[in-house]
Amino acid sequence: MPRVKAAQAGRQGPGKRRLAEHFAAGEIITDMMKKEWKLGSPIGQGGFGCIYLADMNSSKSVGSDAPCVVKVEPSDNGPLFTELKFYQRAAKPEQIQKWIRTHKLKYLGVPKYWGSGLHDKNGKSYRFMIMDRFGSDLQKIYEANARRFSRKTVLQLSLRILDILEYIHEHEYVHGDIKASNLLLSYKNPDQVYLVDYGLAYRYCPDGIHKEYKEDPKRCHDGTIEFTSIDAHNGVAPSRRGDLEILGYCMIQWLSGHLPWEDNLKDPNYVRDSKIRYRDNIADLMDKCFPERSKPDEIAKYMETVKLLDYAEKPLYQNLRDTLLQGLRAIGSKDDGKLDLSLMENGGLRAKSITKRKKGIEESTESSVEDMECSEVQTEEAIKTRSEESRGAVHGSLSQPEASSSSYDSSKTRKRVQKCSRHHVVLPSLLFSSVVCELRCSGL
Image (cartoon, rainbow, N blue to C red; front, side, top):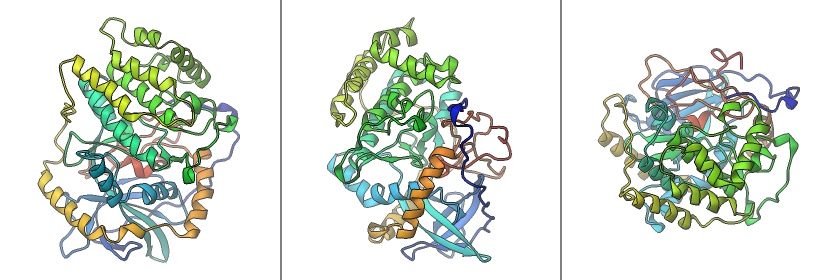
């Protein structure tokens, strides 16, 4: 991923942050609701945080089949706050379950938030957050499959992503960085996909009032350059139509293997102008990406629908789903929930044990997680951190211990960052949106 926004090269990023020390397996941490968690083996380390397997505290050690992970970082670092606010407002288990019931879904690909808090060790304070454990990310599978997904797979993925986007949009947030490396498969079901990394999630409609359209030169080209929306290129805050536009670019790349502007990602203005030109002529975009094969008319229709949306307009999500369902019917298929992805075995673990442990966590957390919120002090720090991190932080990969049995990926490709494709890791990328691969990628 090439650097962008050279004009801001003189801007100073946040100060150097302390690294998290390693915790021994068996360490007990207590979240804000006094629930105890036991740490297992570390599965990854970043610039200033570590991730461990985790489970509810018991007399047993945390095994390789642990259903959760915990991210730990020094409490004065602060890059976890933006995600915490999103998860506490929109990802409580009971909120997600209610949405699934009322919308008659089989599942919803939004990670569940199980708890957070502070932990003192050796006179130092550490912040932590408990999250679901996931499997492989789609980018690894996409690359392993010669950078192609089948038409059915693309449409199935996109239907589930529309479910996710409708949910987070209804909870006043937009994601702004949909891409394969931010889509993780369920640890127990390879046909379920989850959208992760809410470190730069944006509350576009606080208290029901939509943010105004305003171009800010300081924010130009936010996001991952090849996928980000035209609004983002122009420095406009993310919106619902932007998320849907990004999904459209993902669909085209996943199916065709490329996007027309990928030959010059070092020039963000070129990328922006290319997207504007193709937005004005979707047929040309389809001809460029699918020159020798039948055109996916459903994707063209989807893009035509999205480009007509006003900045603050609420999308008709079901109409968009219907368009993609027409594509499935056109190839003689249906929405059967099967992603048809080729996957490697994840440590030979069975879904049954994970499901059983997850159920226990849901039962013990359901009554306590509802009132969990960050303190006022944390909220104030989050606002400051948001400004620093979103404009000055460098996003990179994480390094993974050789003994790890996890299968996450935290590789990041955001603005002003050259994509680090060498250091793929198996970690929950949602937790490390601000972690720097300092040792291996120090040249970025």
